[in-house]
Length: 256
Image (tube, rainbow, N blue to C red):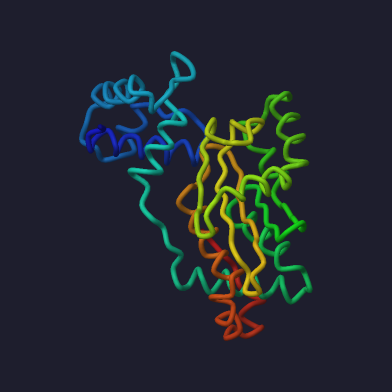
């Protein structure tokens, strides 16, 4: 069991590495965060976290990065639930309506919107109709700079819709499942994380939403985006879209 101090340090390492993709050192934490601890004390605590399997030091002189177990502990025990604010919900509704007004199919619109808001690869599908957006952004991430990793990832993503379709059959209707790194049932992308969930449309069709990104993805944000998109696609919040007039829609910008 981690102490409160260790939980706070693990949370900081996850936050910093998510934002920078650079290993996090004790001196940086001591300088940037108000722990009221020396860098030596922070380093000792990080050593404890490393021994426990939650952090990893890629090089002797480098800082630490979270392991798969570290991310899992963060997601299950530290990460707060994140709900979109009312303003964010209205903006998301407006963007969905704006894209739908261009006669794009709703599943395609959902994938495009999820990808643009998360910065990850998004997949949306109903029965045999799948759309994905964000492959370029995913392949641009520093984790995939090695040519072998890049080729393997690109090849797998070409057929990802078929794999996701089979995977979602084992999930409950309202379940949002987070797979981290080596937990990923799609072994070829075990250096990625995936958030996936089934949903039902208002007409009763079964659909799929998924986000795939590096292990340092923003888990709380991505989970909340999928949760709310499910509500929109399921019809629960679609009626609320129409109170937004066209002028405000054309000027809308979403910032997370």
